[in-house]
Amino acid sequence: MSTTRHPYEDLIAHLTRTSPLGPGEAARVVADVLAYFSEPAEEFVRRRHGELKARGFTNDEIFPRIAGELTGRRVAAPELSLRQLRRIVYG
Image (cartoon, rainbow, N blue to C red; front, side):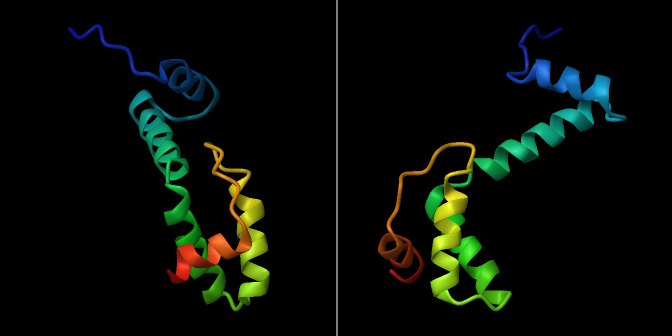
């Protein structure tokens, strides 16, 4: 029997107590959430730019919005100027 603890064992236990999730399902949810929020800043900027562009937003609307969203990421991204955001997308 393995004595290795899952790094988020307390969170998994909390989810199984407070939701209908079993331990395996709770562990998968935690892994999915961590993967989502561990996306590097440059990938996030490119992905969000594409999503917002597809919804009809202009770059003048997109880049300030992305700059604001970056501050809410799990791992604080470096503060990027609008020009730096554009360079990530367009090179």
